[in-house]
Structure formats: structure tokens, C-alpha cells
Figure 1: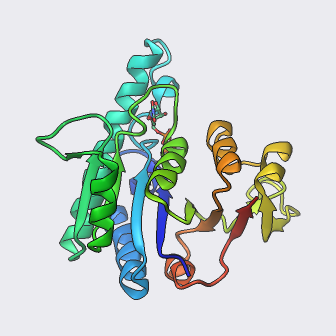
Figure 2 (figure 1 turned 120 degrees about the vertical axis):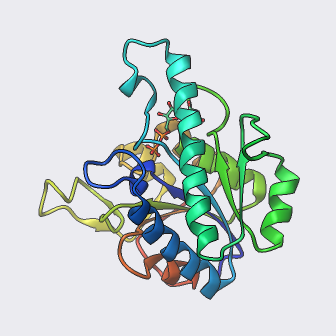
Length: 235
Ligand code: UDP
């Protein structure tokens, strides 16, 4: 059983049809799954959410200065964090957003010890603003924060994909799913789990990952209850 985990969500999970923006219904459904899993398990839960639904660095701002485009991406993660907080709190889940870029009128600054204290008090902590540095991703943020707060695992939530496959299961019907992998396997085979900076950090620090489908009802709950779900990646 896990005591403390970090859940990595893609920004797109908040989007409606078309994959962009923040759709209230999608956000509420996600919050409902998270609340149910949190309450059933009692596991201390922290969350990092991306911003692919709103802005993704130079992929959206190709003609822009790369650092500016990335800072915009970091700000966009704060909007997603606030939307998720709002949905969780309307369902009665105490939540704190902590940001890597100071904006104290909006959310608390990220302070490691304070984050841990919130978790101990049973609050869900959502880390907004990425790492606070351009040229990184929210996958790296998830890894970094998990290591800092002593989370036992990073839960990499995927949309309608139930783990890691040897090729894209949406394109190749013969793709086979892995139950377990090592970080080294992921790096050597170039498997799509998280970006290279993030996976090598997990490998260096022996931080386990679980890749699972958060859109399969109750999957997160089963995972937090200690069941084997998705693909487990360890050293
Ligand atoms: N970003 C950044 N530094 C970080 C985290 C994120 O510059 O530490 C920016 C980067 O531009 C990235 C965007 O924020 O493209 C959104 O994050 P990401 O692409 O990881 O979101 P996801 O794909 O998980 O929705």
C-alpha cells in the first residue's frame, strides 16, 4: 500500500471535444474519480497537471522566443490547477494549489515543508507552474516534486491506454502490453512513458512509476487501494 503518491495528469484531460480549453464537465468527472480514490484509500495525494489543452511552449508559439513560450505554458498549468482545485473543492475535497512561480494573490508559493504539512493534514496538493524553469516539462515537474516530498510512486495517468505497449495500440492492433518494465527498458526502447529528462531522473533516483488508464472507472481507486493496475516501472 502506498502512503503518499504523486498523480501526473495531462492538461488535455480537462478539455472538452477537440482537446482544447477547460470543459467544466470533463473537469468535474476527473475530480469525482480523484475524490473517490482519495477518500476510499486515505493515501496522501499530490497532483501535477500539464497544460497541453491551453498552451504547449514552442509547439503553439513556434515563432516566439522559446523561453517566453515556455513561461506561458507554466502559467497555463496554474489555470488548470485552479480549475481542478475548484472542481475538487465543490465536491468537498480540501485542496491547495502551490506554484513554482510566485503569484501569492492566486495561490501559495511552493515550499516543500509546507506541501508535506498539507498532505499530512489530508489536503490534496496541486503543484502549478511546472518546475518554474523553461525547457522542462510537467513530467519532469512530477518527478522532481515526487522526489522532494518523498512520494513512493508517480502515477502517470493516460487517456484510454491501460499501460505501456511495445508500439502504439491505437495504430497497431498487435501491440503487446507490458505488465512490468525497468526504467532502463523504457530508455533503451524509447517507449513513450514520459520525456527523456524525466525518465532518466526517475532511473537515477529509483523512483517507481505506474502508467495506467485514468478514464477506466475506478482504476485510480483500485490503484490506490494497492491493486496491480497498468504497467509498473521500477529499477
Ligand atoms: N513548462 C515549462 N517548464 C516546466 C513545465 C512546463 O516550461 O517545468 C511549459 C512548457 O512550455 C510545456 C508547457 O509548460 O510545453 C505545458 O506542459 P506540458 O507540455 O508538460 O503539459 P502536458 O503535455 O502534460 O499537458
